[in-house]
Amino acid sequence: MNPLLNPFISIPILKNYILDPGRIQRLNPKQLKKYRDKAFKNIVKYAYTVPLYHTIYKRAGIHPNDIRGIDDIVKLPFVTKNELRENFPDKIIPVGYNKSNGHVICTGGTTGKPVSIYTDFSTMARSAGTILREMNFFNLNWRKSKFVHIGNFNPNRVDLVSQENFQSHLKSFFSMDNHLNIDVDLPMVDIINKLDSFRPDIIMAYPAIFQYLAFLKRKGYGKHIKPKLFWTGGAMLDDYTRSYVEDAFECRLLNIYPSVEAGADIAFECMEGTWHIHSDFFNVEAIDEAGELVSSGERGHVVLTRLWGRGTPIIRYTGMDDWVKLSPGEECDCGLTTPVILGGVEGRMRANIILPNGKVFPPGAFCFITPVLLKLKTFKVKRYQIVQRKIDEIDILLVIDEDLRNVGPSVDVIADSIRESYMKKIGPGVTINVREVNEIKNDKNASKPPPIVVSHVKPEEGYDLLESKS
Ligand SMILES: [Zn+2]
Image (cartoon, rainbow, N blue to C red; front, side, top):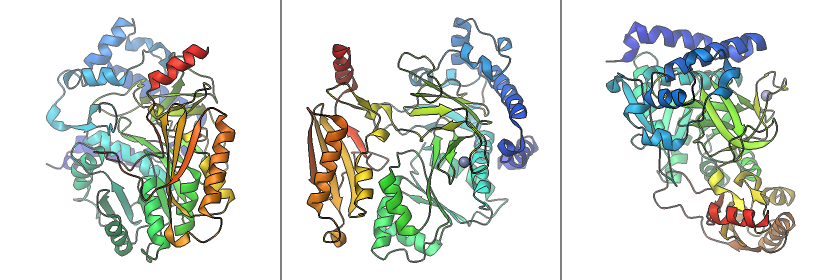
């Protein structure tokens, strides 16, 4: 049965559909705080019916009645990825939860074991509020704008679960002809030809996919693709890729920050480049390696709390590998006042680059290639990848656009400038090889395009070294 035919499900959804998108603009800070306090108290109460949370709160001597508002969040213990994994399936949902109404979604896990959690129809419906808000914000109408999502539609991946169990039910009520999902595994020329005939207003995809599309666009494909906005999330977007794509399509490419565990967008980037957190949907904290909260503006490991939803609650969850710098936020030039992620999400912790001199770089802070290419005003580099082979050896792989090979600065000049820039930033004692390659290879079984920064150095190796230096 279509869940939307059940008024106990559809009426709250309708209410959320009306109230959710505008909330962060409609409420003043005091009202918003009150909203967050209430939502947080409710979600902690809900979590207390879930054996995993019940056990760890009890062990910590915390009862939901001790929680008066969001400021009391510091009283609660963290929840790790392992705890969710080990307690799947029965202990991460409330006692007596009707599993047939729930859906299991699973994180990507190209490295490390994936984690599975439960979601349900109402939770997925509610999550659409973040996207509706973002679309309203950019003056895009979700009923009229043509939307393409190039994603991973494998079983249990969030994209497919949402398509089969949520979007399909909307079809009974709304025309979804303006919405097209394309599988990322299709050949790229097929994808751009589909886009060309669909003529989307908004495209959502990985940065590497946009980069490839932009390359084909430069070669004359996709003449009818005149989008209003590109969205990317789930992978790091560097400035070179951004300008390569924006220049080819004459369209802004902005970040959103979704995660499978979040079930929605945690934050989105406005035209001013500010990453606004959906603070009525989520509470975001940042901690150091020792699990202590870091000060505002300092880099820390993200800790996520979802202030809504059923299925598996996500409260003070440390299992997402992202680095962030947080700020309570002042009024942005776009008009929004929200907490912000300063400079954006810096990528996966496990891809950290650790150097012999003890410096540690999150992947997002290791793209010194970008300023070089932008300064040389060249789009000759089609793709690139930075690979730390050993602790003291880094390969920088460049794929060159053949049509532009003899335009502007030579490949040698580009390679030398990149090498120089890296040597300056990371200091002596590391060999840097800049090499031209024909392609950047995908990982085996990877569901995402290859990352821009890869390290083959085990974190332990790096941390041992850090310890011996201190
Ligand atoms: Zn803004």
